[in-house]
Image (cartoon, rainbow, N blue to C red; front, side, top):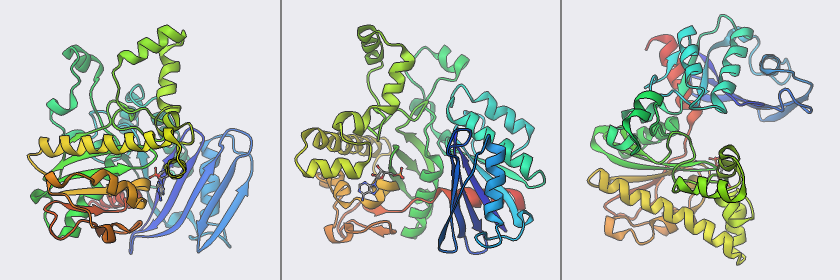
Length: 398
Ligand code: AMP
């Protein structure tokens, strides 16, 4: 079966068509600037790039353009959209309702709507993507895969904030965690790679990309994670501040006469690596500047390294030890220097990186020395395959 994976943003739609016979990617594309000037589609398939620029007023038009690119006689990969057996949608916030992926029906749509207050930027965009695909492919089954679902196994001691219980009971204020599909894929793949059952392992998975989160996976289940009610909590990220004393918000708002909304925008879009370094939100630029002697860039790198170290220490303590530490996503997969800096001085935990093995990019590999009692690995994440597998399993009932 061929499965289409859709990740809809407010003005963009990323997609990938996967042939589940061999899990190969047939086409990968992006429709951007939906509803604004300069709408365009870019698709990579059959080793070539295909671009179309045309006005797109909404996600329905974007969806139609995606299908016409996929079925294009010269550049497409399927002869008709009937060849697409199912669509898997990435959805940001499943709240407490969704502990796993589900076939989309009207009840699911209602529940995603109910979670809009928890994911005000992403859930409405995800819904637009679902609605548009339903309109254009009315007979194709669709599945929702939630970024939060994997983390729903956290116990209350890990997911509650220390607020009056009323805020949890009434408003569902709690830690939800994100990147769940990535942490789930990477932790399962680590067990396979090590030839172990998930029940035999205590893992710490470090998803370090533009957004970063760390997850404690005990015997195959998430028991804690660094992101919170939104993806703002945890370590510093490309443009997000990571965790801080919430009193900072009021302090700055009072001093600079800005609203809480404006301050949150600063915390989400102008902070983190960008805000500290003043150079860029992109780790490659920040590390280059640090190498060239830029002090602020050095501090930004050190803050990320120190933040990840603290989570590793905390989660090892929380799980009574750790069997493997796994690096994934853009920074985690590609930057040996950063992995080495994070693991430096962790001998006391039984962690030793082998510099030769660590000189790897984007491939599954153990990077610890043979005498390291904790295995350290690089496992490239593949959220699309995880979404496609869930979709296939749900639509075929297997
Ligand atoms: P992701 O969100 O997983 O796509 O990751 C994007 C982040 O990975 C960006 O901050 C990139 O700068 C970073 N990245 C990609 N390759 C490297 C690299 N070789 N060294 C450092 N950061 C990298």
